[in-house]
Length: 372
Image (tube, rainbow, N blue to C red; front, side, top):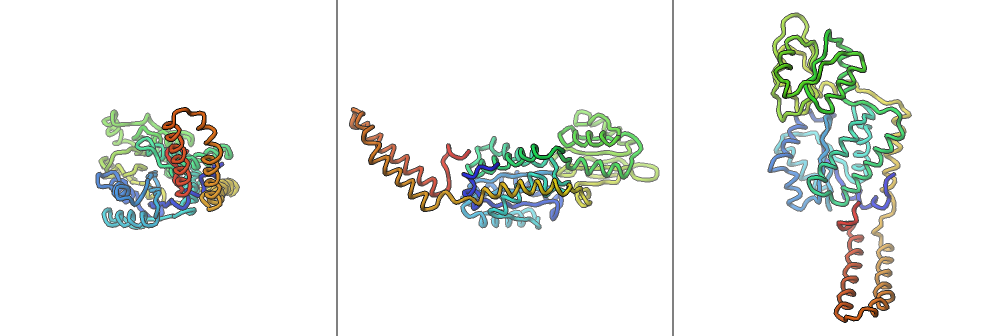
């Protein structure tokens, strides 16, 4: 499942600082994301100051996490957490270090920390976060290895479980089932979440209209006057949608699953956001399915307990192999090279290369070609 050769070098360098729906509101999580996207990002400052080698941000509808790789991950995490608190006024962040960070991130990717346990979308979102970061700038070896580990357990989950569990779309469908709106449901948004919600509602027998977007905003606004239920799943950077007042008894339902919330004024609608959805009971997996996923996590973590490849015994053996190469195997080969200057350069290059390889292993930081 997880390649044991990279295990020990990862756990000691990794720290996660983040905020989940359990302790931090959707609006406050979005404040952190906006600050991170700004030119004066605390994460950029952390890397520029040499306090972290690399950082990947994982942002979903229920959480935002920063995976930090550093020589002193506890210090880097403290700096980042203090900056979030001071500049964004957000408290309630969590942190996980070393093996606990790995267990947490793997559990998140498998949906074990989700309101709807086992949700499938979260694994794709975590992997996409790593892919996006890699496209922006190649990930360092530790993060590439961690990326591969997560991909491995997510793939193993797909093979092991015949049922793929829904996420926030299930919470929306449960709420709509409870309210039983009279009439078609209007959905604003055309992305993956909006499509998943439309499918989930259709599977429950609810009628949904064609998905609205910016191009059909006028038609959506006109429909609001009569809609019995509206779902918003869009991605503007701040709230902008004002809903109209409604006459008659009973407020129609509006469910806004966007992050940040898109509805600025609920008007005559009863507004439910991610915070209210996540405050409910959620949905639990069967015990056997949960146990299977927990087993996948523990099997992956087991690889991180393999012996450290930088032990003195390993380094001593590498040094012996280097000496043997230079003293026994190289001279006969160099004897076939007629140019004395070329022989000298070849010997120096091989000596430099073997020294660099041993240094890389000792420092636990493979070179550019050794991180995958």
